[in-house]
Structures are given as C-alpha cells and as structure tokens.
Length: 429
Ligand code: EPU
Image 1 (cartoon, rainbow, N blue to C red):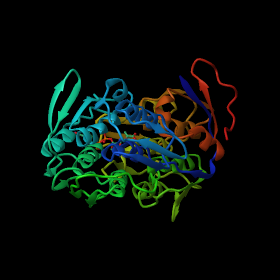
Image 2: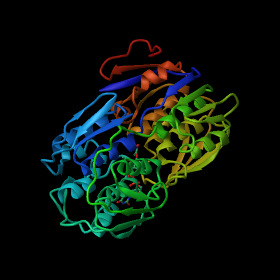
Image 3: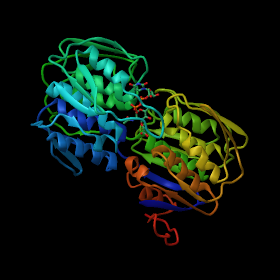
Image 4: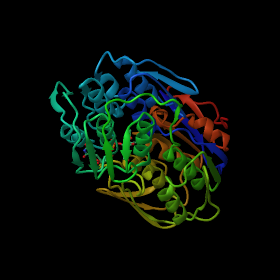
C-alpha cells in the first residue's frame, strides 16, 4: 500500500489544471448503457473509481478503450449484473440499477452496504424505480429487479439523493410517458448527466433544480460528438484550500466558479482573497484565518465533500469555528486524525467545534475515506515537519495525479510504499 510523505510549511503558489469530475464521470459512464452503440467521452479523469466503472461495463459485456477520448461500446449487453466484488470496491456501482433495467428489463446488483461515512441506504433509488413499474427482491445480498415496461410516474423523493436521482433519471428517459421528479438532487453532476442523456436524444427539463421533468422516448442513440465531462468542483475546492491553508495563492484552471459558489463564499469568510473568471478561480491568503461557522447542505449549499478539507483549514483559524454535518451521519472520522497533528476539535453528534491552534505539527496519520484523506494531506501541507498519510488508495479513487499537481505548485510531497521509509521528501513535479 502507498503512503504520501509531506514536508509541510511551504506556501503553495501557481496554477492547477482541474480534471473532469469523478461524480459526473461515474454516472455518465454507466449511462452509456441506455443507448446501444459506440460512445465517446472526453475529460474523463484517470481515477481508480473510473477504472472500476469501466471494469463493471466490461463485465456487462461493454468493452472500452481509454485515451484522451474514452470509447465505450454498448452495442451488446451480455450480463445484467453488478457483482459484489466490484460494488464493494466502489459503491457508485449501484448506478447500474437504473440503466440495466431500462436496457434489459432486468438487473442483479449487489447491495452496497454501509461505508466509513455512514449507512447510505438505497431505499429512495428503489422507491423511484418501483414507481416506474420495477419490482425488486432482495436475496443473498443482491437486489434483483425486473420490469416489463417502464411507465412514467410522479415521484417525490423523501430525501434529496444524488445517485438516487441519477438512477431514476437514467431509467425514466426510456419510460412510456412523463416522469416528474420532486425533491430531486440539484447537484451540478446530476445536471451534467442530464446533459449527456440529452445529447443522446433524451427529453429532460429542470435538471440542476429540485424538479426534473422527463418525457420518455422509445430509443436513444450515442451522440455524434464526444461528450466532455464537467470540471471537478471538489478537486478545485481542495486545491483552493491548499493555497489558503499554506498562506499561498492557487489558481484552478478549467474550474466553474458558479458551481463553487458556496466554497468561495466560505473561503472569503475565512479571510481569503478570492477571484473568479470564465473557466478559472483563484484563492490566496496573506492574513490570519478567521473562524467561521459552516453547515453542509445539498447543492447549492456548502458541499459535504468539502467539509473535511475546511476542518483542516479551520483548525488553524483565530478563534473557534462550528462545523455541522447534515448529510452523512459519520463524516467526522478525519477529526481524530487531525488531533494527532495538533488540532483541537470537540465532536458532539453532527457538530464539530474546531478551536484554532497556532500551528500543526507533522505526524503519521491514517486516511479513512476519500475526503478525509484530502483533509489530512492539506493539514500536512501546513504542518511543521513531516507528515505521512497512510492508505493512499482512498485518494487515488478521487484525485487525479495528486502529488504531481501539488508538486507543480511547490508542495514537497512524495509517494512511497507503506512498508519502506521514504527518501527525503522533495517536490514532485
Ligand atoms: N439516502 C437515503 N436513502 C437513499 C439514498 C440516500 O436515506 O436511498 C441518504 C444518505 O444516507 C445521505 C443522504 O441521503 O444521508 C444523501 O446521500 P446521497 O444519496 O445524495 O449520496 P450518494 O448519492 O450516495 C453522492 C456522491 C458523494 C457525495 C454525496 C452527497 C457520487 C458517486 N457520490 O453520494 O460523493 O458525498 O452524493 O453530495 O456521486 C465523494 O465523492 O467523496 C462522495 C462521497
């Protein structure tokens, strides 16, 4: 297993190119199933989760070719299953449910189970698909779904769910008649999926808001031009915090400022300078970090996927900040590791009180999930001395070429094997 060795305390300066969004690429890759033929996708990030999704498509009978433009051939589907060995590695495999039901009238998908950040049930995915006429049986850890004919329905989600909305959307585009989704997730990644489906002939309105209206069509066909995945707002936000926490100045090229609005407001409130333009954002800090109160909310609220990174930043603020996590019940696992670096954080249920300290000091820490890992890397970049972040595979699931991008803006980081001591950290660029 790999670890990241960071020599902290160097302000980061420079420009980071933003990759395609993981959470848009994953549903878009599997959505190719709803239109038989060859698909071309651009700006697909090179991530472990993307490879897992391509493996799943391969199992289903759809080969792919990875390059600057990814090609996926969904002409034939030979196997309607998302098996446990793939779902357990990547819970987004559950996104196969809607497209497989729409394409084959049948789907056999392993239940994802809980994970480090919470229970993460899929009852809303099933509720929405049932309303479209699907029936489900749970057996042997799998959900087995069948449908004769998908029929449009009026569905109100009890909880706004990103992948739940996406699953139902991918089935509804091929249902007979109109489907209305209320309390739908409004995240930019849902909108990107809808745009991709529209490029194949789907009729969807309102994606990116909480009410999505879909007019079912009888068939869809691969788009003529390659579809380009939207930029990753969470990756961009993470690099902006890297600039802010080290007292540096980072510009993210290719980022969409509008999608980052709640993150940029929080950076400004915390005492950072922020600038935005067409296709770029920039954040810097030359004064103290100010304590702020944050609450995670569905989009356009502050994203849960940036909560851990802000907790690292606020651990160095003047004064005490309050961070409330409203989306996932167990998403403070990074706090205990931040304490090992010298942070002062009290947890009470879903509320973390972060008492700012003057400095953090390097230590060995263990990553528990993707964004927790990012938070530990950020804290390590600001800490005095050397920080080792173990279990790097979490980061490889969601950050493309992390140490290269960080090295290029002046971070002293090195990937090493957990078994071996690292050579003296150096800039990886
Ligand atoms: N929920 C239910 N029932 C359901 C589905 C969700 O109760 O059927 C609850 C969840 O337990 C949670 C809340 O609804 O409390 C919202 O969860 P959501 O379903 O929106 O999360 P998700 O679709 O499983 C996606 C992202 C996550 C991101 C969340 C929230 C993908 C592949 N994953 O997960 O990304 O945190 O939305 O924005 O899109 C990450 O990238 O690190 C990550 C975890």
